[in-house]
View 1: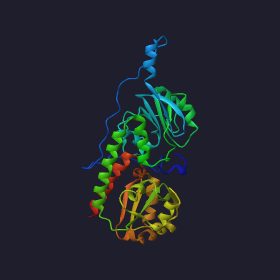
View 2 (view 1 turned 180 degrees about the horizontal axis):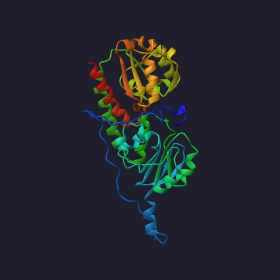
View 3 (view 1 turned 120 degrees about the vertical axis):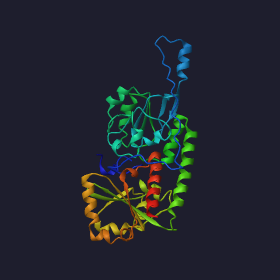
View 4 (view 1 turned 60 degrees about the horizontal axis):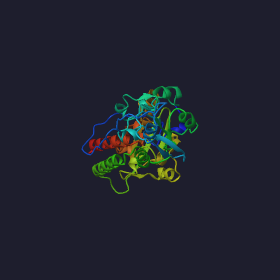
Length: 335
């Protein structure tokens, strides 16, 4: 597992033992965009005629990426490899890569049903595995920039960010523009915003209701700042950060590691408990919940603790959509 600083997304490699199982989709579920066109790319033979060469040249175009690199890319790429922690960004647009960095997140994401048929290129990525896939385009959104040069020797490589560079919608719209799928992005986010409004109405929050996200991961406790699950709680559904959490948000902290003793300093009216099924996490969670300190927390005493799989701490579009279903189900059960 990568070092702990990689713990939060975007939506980012690895906050976890996290991550994604499919959920049922109620009425306002976001629509999935059509898949990319399936026409094959023309190739140029060594003795190609001038007309054939001109036709082949038209099948590529220039693209200036996040690193200000001008990259010549296929006009209609067919074999795409994704290097990063948010393959859901592509899947939400109907783009299914032939390979992606799944060795860590593949068992942690909320959409394992959508990963079938995608080859794992490893994390860190294996150049040999990517080369064997013969990609015609590589999409890069990872924190380790040193990999860009090696990838560029395999196929045209477009850097769309460095893992967490942009918020979800900006990330996805950038990819949509790259592939000419801006209409699909518009459809997805319009549907998502409609669904957010529906779920928010179901929650029936009181003005100023505060919430805290507590992640139990192995033997550690983490309070989430403004990223991961809290992007939905604070940014979409109308919860407010608890006072201690607000300080993290203001400081731009994605998360902090805490001890049991300081937990009450971060507690809000509602607590969202992110956890996983590992034995180490289960033991840590059990010890916490058996403590007098835990039982004295108002949110615990008043039944406002909601447990979620830590896979929902990513911020790709697929996770965000399925998270709304999960939260709506939790609050429906409380009514």
